[in-house]
Length: 119
Image 1 (cartoon, rainbow, N blue to C red):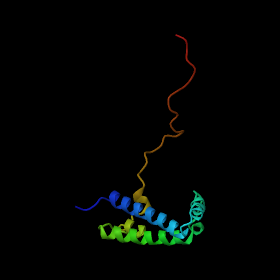
Image 2 (image 1 turned 60 degrees about the vertical axis):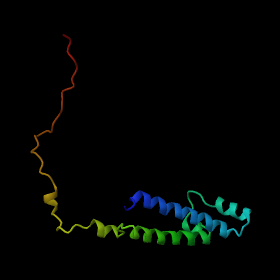
Image 3 (image 1 turned 180 degrees about the horizontal axis):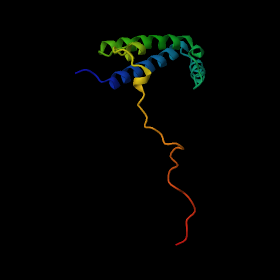
Image 4 (image 1 turned 90 degrees about the vertical axis):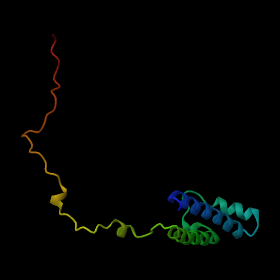
């Protein structure tokens, strides 16, 4: 039985996180202060270029292995433009628009909302 896309993605992400932690540990040279310094530099606005070099390399390798794993599990990975292309010829703009009903002059004023008359 093949794995669901969710299971495959969980395995990929788990592996990437473990690889990133291992890369940070290796990049610190076994020094706890250096590891903490590297961890503290990572925040929500961190860019790829701001990450330590060992972590950048680990992320690059994780991306390559993710595509390989997806292909090995039988999932197709392609360009979005190719995946969304329709073999049928495009319809003209006139065919896509639905014809509108004729409008009454003055538009539709809706229900009257005048003052109530006492009964």
